[in-house]
Length: 121
Image (cartoon, rainbow, N blue to C red):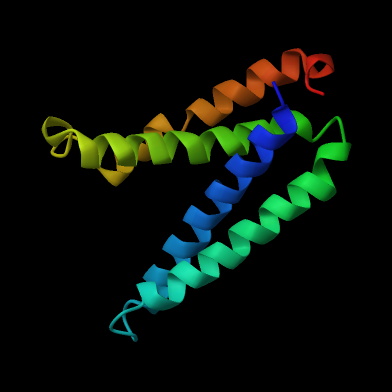
């Protein structure tokens, strides 16, 4: 498996989600449609994080477990969001707090990847 690609896409998704949510919420009090500003900023930040991961950060063997942990957070949040929108019975129980609790899978991935860093090429 190409772990570099998995980490690159996941870090980009995580950075996009964090930046878009942060900018949207910061501007929500002053701008009516703050998501129109937050989403493009999130795309730019996500693209920059993905490019940095692919070009620079993956070259450090010590950073690889952390990058995979961050990537797992993005994948977990997207999976919860997809389940929330696709399965009507899941919509009620899924909240932001529960989605972030599911994102703790990133900590588990980090711990597992840290035990075997030699297998991450």
